[in-house]
Length: 429
Image 1: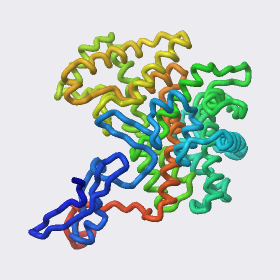
Image 2: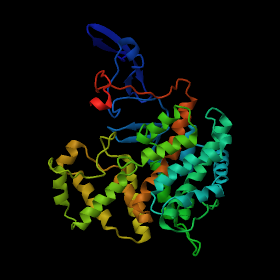
Image 3: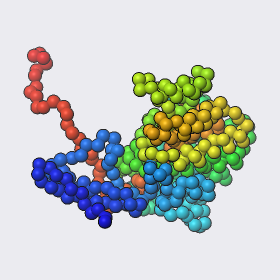
Image 4: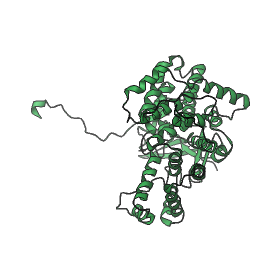
């Protein structure tokens, strides 16, 4: 028998609230009228039990370890599709046919350059500036250069701004990286694929020829696909909140970049590498560090284990585990950190402590190893994450603006401050 409503009893008065059912059978209580009917609100710090939107983009079953984009399992997309196919899927809802794919790719390629004026923007930043600071600032500044495509409700302007941002973000990211290491900026090469162009702009130098290794290119493609979207995470929720004010796409995505910058979000894979480096420097005694993680009185925590949503194995980590080994083998590199990571994973899958707490390796556990093998420094990790997450941000911004029920986001609060007080003149305090 299907559940149609939930009952709430307050001071002897009973209220009914409708049940909302998702396409995969998940249930939610619609409390939009809660305050109007009862005068009360819910308190859910961190929004762990609060649904902020109805969305048709990404489905996650954390208990079963399932991740699907528009109904397609992440494993199938990583094995068969290109990142540009997945970007189209996320943004427009269906996989493109050949004609749509060519038109989409051709339009994006035409927009890969950025204005020469924007290049001078990098000159005012100190060399040690974090690339995420430059990335968010330049993305926001794009709104001043492209005032012809800022209306979120004009379909043509939306299309142009989407293609511009998809095309220019890798260029902006690469220029930010080159600035941070003092090398000349490398222009995009439109004959290359999307992931190959990223690698070319990041690692090529004018004085030498640079060829993108096909296996590394495929690994980068998988990395971007895996990060394409992940439901209502911190940065995506930020994009939706900022976008609900009808902010333009450039300003909205700039806000998403800043949310992603945080060490608990896009910087999590950096924390994994730093942890593995600490274990390696200490001599690689894994038992010592595992025991520290188990000790309630020890502040140390194993990074890259467990997930806010997944209570089973993160399906993305399985894909990246094999990809990281493939990249290292192809490049002829032996990374002792990968050996430590594999041994840690073996421990986590055997010991009761990890199994009972469902602390399985997550996507951050392996993504940092791949980026490290490719040659990216730690501070570039969240930048590459942003490149992958961009189609998801765009998809949510577009979905939200297309929904007639969208309202400006305005959470409530429970006030716990002082009661009314009288002003006391400064001389009497």
